[in-house]
Length: 73
Image (cartoon, rainbow, N blue to C red):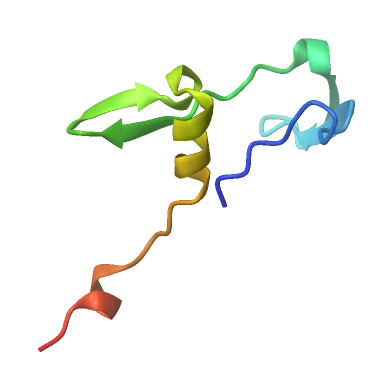
């Protein structure tokens, strides 16, 4: 779920659909823009890229839950 692919895992180019024309567009790595992931830590938001290796590992191991499944009557 929170896996960030390394450059070796990414494909060199990927086709996406242009929403305005509906045509497939192929982008190279040079044309792509990295997506920055932010998370809430201790009451404020920080980019994942600012975390050290250990904190990035903790982020990858997080488990998500829905409140309905946890609450008891």
